[in-house]
Image 1: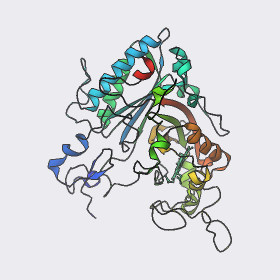
Image 2: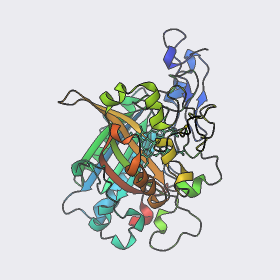
Image 3: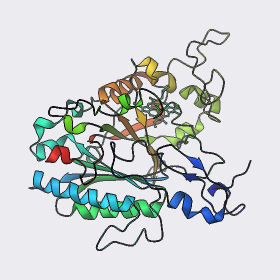
Length: 403
Ligand code: HEM
């Protein structure tokens, strides 16, 4: 098979092999002349019914950053900040400089599918005296027995997710967002993540995580009839105190450390039992290919379930959770080697849903009680953010809440 893309650069040329867009990945021809016409030139729209960065195909580089409003800053400062951030996001996503004093880090590059996605945490509403308009969906997530959360790396008044298919473009946006915060808000925490580069594989594929598993197979797809209902707050008939969330979504963010030394010692067969899928191609242990349905009832000749009762893919399936579903859109992370010699690596798990109580919460409750993956992971930080719908032309993000 021809690897006429990043994965084979040097052998067949430098063309990068994917263009992102709402429709997903499109493989590019292996023509060096098309290099910037592919990864670099792909752009996402800032304006629209939904913010970018939710259904946008996973980018290869991500930054998550949370802020708290500065002492003394309230609604007025928040309005000015959201105006600044929106103007910057619109420019950067179109491949333009951030404005006066641009750092120049993204010069020469196209927009590279850059997205900036903005959310409000529970505490934002107290700080801006908008508590009456805080959705019930922002109630704190329940405590889970396996949580080992660091409050300094959790929550926050404001949250920004940055994604791009170029590391410099993503970093440039991160700096611009931080500078725009000025005196109005202070960084609370920041995390860096990555995914596979577009074009690294012969054809577009579901990503792998740092445990080596194909991860994202059973995500709801925008082409499915109930996708919008599961992922986005309805726009039709929106009224009342939470109408500003029309077209929005709730993001649950969990920093999940992977205990890779332990995981990698586990023989392949046992690794596959933990998930209920083959590692090589993500197919269910009951056979077929990656997209074949799991046969949850199938037993082996000795009477045991082929997909074990505690397999992650069984426990998390919507069929096992009264239909609870979410769009998982994570970044892997690696923050070097910890003092004990183990990699500080894992998943910046970001999942999107119209209502966390019909998405993340019931599924995590169940995983917390008996997921075969639990001994190999540790939830280290957590956040829940209300991400309003996309701005209309001339609007800034969150305007319908803040005006
Ligand atoms: C499925 C890995 C954490 C929810 C999967 C699959 C893998 C995987 C390999 C099967 C392929 C797929 O359908 O995507 C992981 C790893 C995790 C993790 C390595 C932690 C480091 C979580 C968490 C949740 C979750 C915290 C939510 C509370 C799901 C869901 C599915 C899934 C909903 C799809 C099930 C289905 O629709 O059949 N995960 N997962 N996962 N996982 Fe996770």
